[in-house]
Length: 365
Image (cartoon, rainbow, N blue to C red):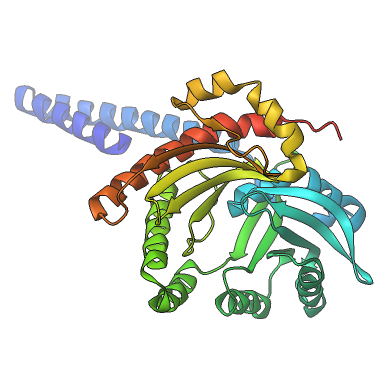
């Protein structure tokens, strides 16, 4: 752009001089133009070279330079920095323990999916994938009744990636397999940074097709619920404010994570009494401490959400709920669409109000 602009300017100047002055002066101006253009070009090149020299060099670092021992160094590091993996996979995992016994073997990390409350096995391998680690991860999942397996390795062979893809395509949505490549990168001599590259995840399209086929035998209320939750999930994902969601199922509830185990948002779609609602569902394992903790902040929470909530409406139940309900004609398509908008808005409001408080909660036990 600089070259073009300079050329046009001096050509224009030269043409004027040629018209108004004699050829000798025109030649002199041409020489001046050449000198000026050479000066500008050299200045521009020096500036560009200076800019390039100021950039650092990006280079990959061998994993063993950071973690010489997988079980003693890498596994504890990952357990403490699980948010990096959560961000890569779009999940919310809470680490339960490391090196957990599973028969005669030990699972590297056992976590719990905050969205479903189910166990997740994380198998680490600071090297190229092999049959041994694939077999172990499946064994750990079966022994510990896990719903997901996350296999982390520095390099995935095509065969092992295909194996994970095959497992995802030929198992129900109750089981999920993830393949994650880990890398270390640094700029010049900076501290190395981790990058997770997801190589294999459950195939949503394949599983959705299987559900559609299975839904043909459902009752009308179940079909309505499946359709309702499918549209609700799509609308919730479109907001880009929830990192992960469960698969829609033909049932009256749909859970959304609050970022901590044993407590989540449990939305309902009751086709029998035409009721939808948003509930914070607190499992009995933490209910005795969590409910009073949240009740102390009742006024602030309700102000943030903008609605009065029902606090523990069934006090005799061991599990506790904090809820907001509304009636809607679920047989009417237009009313259902409005209900989905209402539910998405309230779900996000509940998550915004409750999630930070839930994550700050510290149990006394």
